[in-house]
Image: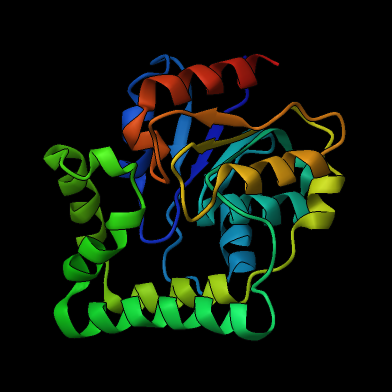
Length: 237
């Protein structure tokens, strides 16, 4: 029997971010989407996941969830049979002006969430998180905004803190020895294809990153059929 598949959502996301892709996977697959609760560090999120997970499982993380997946691999690599990293990253917050710019950009979004509401913040955030031609797809955009609106500004702050204090995952990637899928949307401006190829290059004997055309950062919602196909090939490895 195939290993259970644990899916890890990204910043301010939940099961709805994975649902379009889940709908394309066989109904017989045992899939579970984790909830990060009130955790404010990636390590805590990984520890929570491991405390609730079966002994052995396949693991797929999106965006912040990909970084959580790397922390799971740091803590308990022997429990993971397959690893998928979608629209994510592996480096810590940079030092100097680049790190300051990232922090300021994230805090500016938090200020909008506090002053105008989470949906207003998400309306700004989503502009760079889907492929440009999908910004007029009202069903897709409403699904993203509704998902964010279910969360609070306080939770947003906790997850921002988790990302700003993120560990370097380079060493984890270099020690991966299980079937791994590195995938992103071609139009992902936050976590671009070059970043995913850099991750793939660190994993021993890893094939090139899979790039999904006409999709952005929310690739599982934008191109669920193609993501599901890639995942089924990965799980069969």
